[in-house]
Image 1 (cartoon, rainbow, N blue to C red):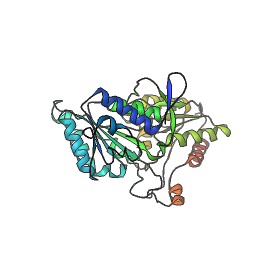
Image 2: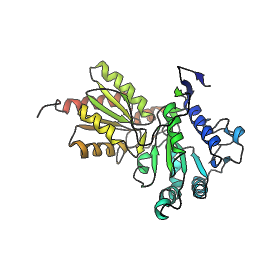
Image 3: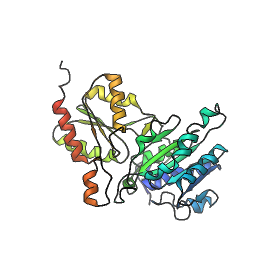
Image 4: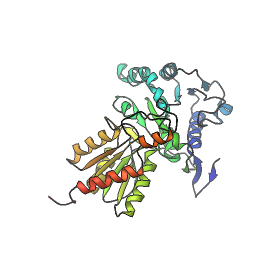
Length: 336
């Protein structure tokens, strides 16, 4: 349940922040429809749609079969015909089934029709590992970052979930909104009044002088834990939450790395062709060679066995070790 917090803020669970943003936008725009598995009276797999079926009815909160290609196709078609749609994909793994209508139609409709057709669609999908095995644990966001016409966002807390979803639901083109299973139990302060988080703008969460850690989604919490551990060892880490993966806010990232001189990226998705690889290369295009390290999972499917799952996933200890290694290899700032 939500609770009153500091002046001008209310404390919400992550799932409540999503429901609040969606309720406000559905109230504002009668064209907005929600499609997906269990989005109706059940309230969503993580209860992130709780209360919306009672408020807006089955015509606007529409349960669908377990058929992701059809779900995304219906959402794309409805949006192209004048609705605004949110399609809920319970596990990001099954985004693969809906890539054809998303990538080959929704992302390209404006370009193919000289702007006469737009597709105001949000695909909300849940990524990440939490004991559910190889086909229900993947983080595939880097697959989507290179699709022209498609925007990709990934909140890390209730405030960014609320603000980014509000912004995504007002876009005229398709947006993929990626949350994480481990974020739903978390709570945090959200402004009491309506507000938006701009797509394409990162957030500086912690200032530092020795290394810049760039991450997104649930890994933000891992990065902050690592930064606290590094502080005990005398290392001052700056932490940036990307929030928006497409477009990337390279101004904020490059300014930080220009100050610290060292870059570490952290992600739960694979580092091969990953978010960190893209960030690091773009930094070096701007600043020239800088010491950089990528931290991610092992190159293996995520097991449902809790011991093997933990072994596969990146954690604060691995990030701390990687930062220490790269700092030991890097030349002191100001040296030749």
